Length: 419
Image 1 (cartoon, one colour):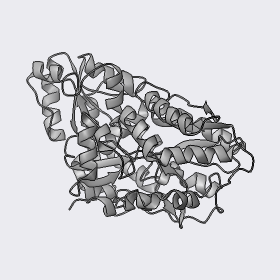
Image 2 (tube, helix red, strand yellow):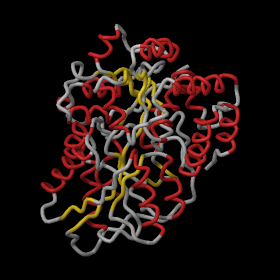
Image 3 (cartoon, helix red, strand yellow):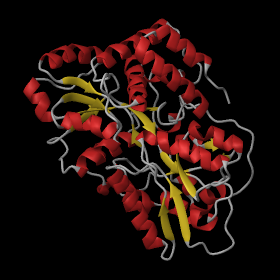
């Protein structure tokens, strides 16, 4: 049984239930002329989206200087470490990027972020976002972030020219991929390119999803699926088989160079989120000609989602300007400026679909389709809090080396935190 659209978006996303951490956001008494925004959008295919959003913010807020505090590093892994130090040292930026969902759990518990429900009510956002998304970011009636987009994790990228040369079409299942991989390797190509640890976890979640199905995958994060069950152990062993067909011995430094191997013809496939579309367009490649994409094996009709969002930190030096930034992030104009450049679809349901072409046209339609099954991403903060993700990261590093599925499953299950 699959997980269906909109109201069931929160299926597989445990609703946060945490002690309240203070009241409404600061309004900033003095006129703020600067806003420092902390993000990890510094690389190709990411910074273009941020630049478009900042340009729209500048048009709407003349006289407010934008201080770009972006820190480069795959999926925010480096930025999050820098940010944690700043928050612990009582040196918050005016707003910082976070993945919507359980990623913010520890920051909420620590009192680092302000409740933004008053801003939602002022701007009328509660009626403009899918109910399941609002549920996923609501904690005891409080809302601590403003989603600017929706990304899809479960996508397999390829070069049409390379596959034509090989006489292949994208695999429908991971078993199909393993069969193809042997033929691809015999031609001297890498079947699947891979990057650093977070991209390996990104692959893991989608092998699990494609093997277990939407419902069983979703219940991995809520306690409904036993990590040591035969089905999960089989899926974990399949992950190691897939990884063995990658260039794991010489992984790329980040996701962009891993994807470059596909476009350059050295690798057949790369599994990455739809931010890859924006990156490939920066290389003047045309969708369906220079690159192609399908749902990752076994996940057709499933949307493994994540959402980038921004916060109002408690004690933000320029809280008034920060609220203006958040208004921009939640606006139709801001989301329609940002998402076509970023390679994502808007979190709002009332934006201009005509602005979304190529891959994004299909993505917008599938996101809105009532038949689409929706689950949340592990790697990108939706279904597991920071502490559990850290446990999984440590266990995964060992698992990639020793391939001991039972030991990995036990470590993950033992590390689960219940809020």
